[in-house]
Length: 114
Length: 112
Image (cartoon, rainbow over the protein chains, first blue to last red):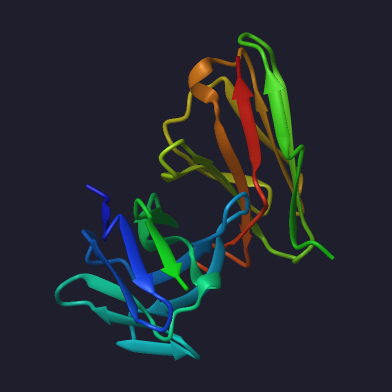
């Protein structure tokens, strides 16, 4: 069935270190993979996304990689800062009834310590 | 200037009551969604509308009834509220199906 697994559930790093969050998906037809950042008391905010026709995308300190064969994708944050602390969600598109919907991972709580 | 807005931000009510949450987007998007986020932060889609037409209805109890008066608005009405309905409800919109989604600030519903 439709499933997106996300690891780890919590991640604690020192300021300046890198953080990596990994997701796997089950539907080989998925072709859109966004990442969201949710700060306390706010809605999820799209930070980066990737489509299945590319293997990597970068935006300043954030990068996403996609391995379609293995059906997994990862978020990489370099030079972490305290303001990166939040819950991060991966998602994968799923075709259902002729329409695309997003299936979300369970989230990773990232804490960046000064 | 807000892209996706929801009202109210907080809603506290008793079991058995009926309540509504409103959502508006000024992005000109064709597609709107309702999501439920439980206490463990798990995000699950409830409904999706495309051009005012219901596209996705995810095994949601029929006590929940969405209404889209126009492309910019998607409201959620909940009848006979139950304790298990307590959660944060997010509205989102996207240019079309399968495209990037933008979320509202959420409505925290507490049923006592």
